[in-house]
Length: 225
Image (cartoon, rainbow, N blue to C red; front, side):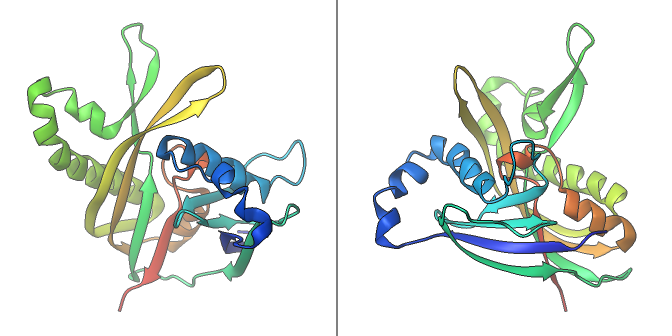
């Protein structure tokens, strides 16, 4: 596996950016994810043909974390950038704490037999009458999140010791001249045990779930005593 870098990118506070800050990071929460995506992409798009090869997540209104196989660049002098090599030494049986923001989906066939992605929580909520969905939402988010993460672990070389759903929300990402993209976002945290490190590290680098271009999929880990 190639060298990975974990970077913290913070929007600079100097006067030259002060007037632009409301445009770069809108106060409207509906606009923030799309704006952050454009900002972070500016630090990695070093060519017109470049495809996304990094993961990122919001770490504050003016701060982001990114995991990448190349160092971020800042040609427009927008960020204060701190980077370090990310090379955890993991063995079978190592215990980790984690946080993960994920767009977790399941694929079902529609009425025409075509595969269609569905948010895992909404997929389960459809089995409830509309009047009961608000009450069941929190419980189903935990159940669906735990089951989805267990399935991820079976493929990625880890088992779950504990998982909590810190938040679940639907986000609408505006698009020019198109309907907004609607994403279900789960914020998960907990403890895992490594079962196959040779599977876990490449999957960690690739990210978990969908919508990685919109700040999902980056699992942050820390050794647990």
